[in-house]
Image 1: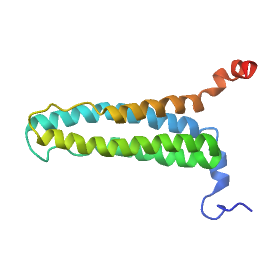
Image 2 (image 1 turned 180 degrees about the vertical axis):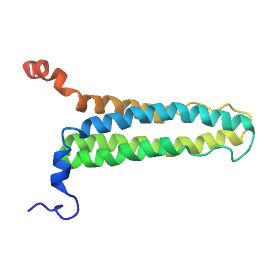
Image 3 (image 1 turned 60 degrees about the horizontal axis):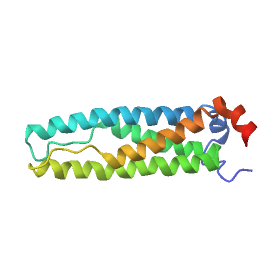
Image 4 (image 1 turned 120 degrees about the horizontal axis):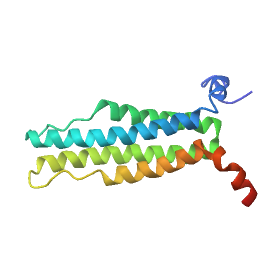
Length: 148
């Protein structure tokens, strides 16, 4: 008997096991795209001049949360790869939170232009690299196994 048998339907998660790395990769790519659109939206909101003009953008928040939850599901199927992906997804989540607050401070201090969310972009790039490694490892597996 599995310890999480009654909390998580393990058979359903096991059925999704081959697709989960691709789902995480899709969420990471969508998160990068929505981050670009969100930054443009924040820049337009800051130009309007209202102090509380900058708001969170729901599609970006949903892709971030989807990436975190999909990486948690991936951790059930592949503990090592899922743990690394979950740490990277949580780092994207935390950096998004602080980058949003810094954009609000920059918008209130009318003397500065809005900067790009560099910490969140960096965390997203690492998440993208690892998600692509997990998703597309089958492409390099023969070469990898012949060397290693």
